[in-house]
Image (cartoon, rainbow, N blue to C red; front, side, top):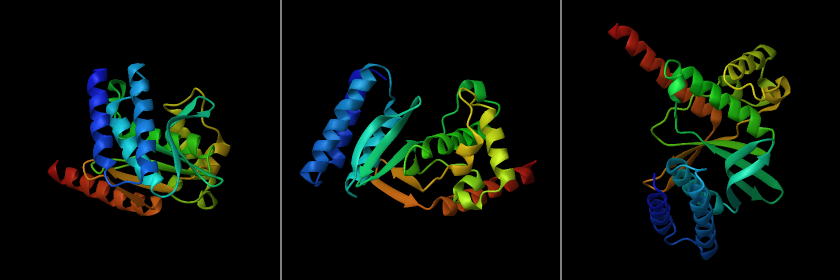
Length: 223
């Protein structure tokens, strides 16, 4: 997307979602918008992620967080949305379901591994971790990662590491990272409606699993 179109889109969004917000929130949205435009000029961000980041950022600001976007967590990790409230830190990674051409033959497994890898690598660097998704995407969360670490079996930890290692080896996730990883919230981000809904990961994983099972059963019946 040409930089002028990126700039136009994020400016239009901030004008829309900034209406009737406290002055502090509007000022911070303008700052984040300018940062994303600058990163876009360097070819470092894409419009679909950036738009969702801004909507999520507004939601968190209204809850009292100080928010940054494209924030360096160290260790080669840059999170989409980073928020601080009091002494606590929160990172949110945006997932849209994009699958690279090289993974056209294994899209479900690739998406599942990417989600597992993000939860595992990012969550151990902050106090709370969340995944942000559009309403039209069914997020596939490994069931063991949807629950608190204390309920995670040794076998589940090994399976998650094995899944991550299929696609992410530089560096690979460690057993300890998988054991301690924690997903706290799923943020469903409706850009058009400027609505962000927070859903408990275990509830979301249960609903998503049920939907996917229905799809699989329907597919088998058609064969």
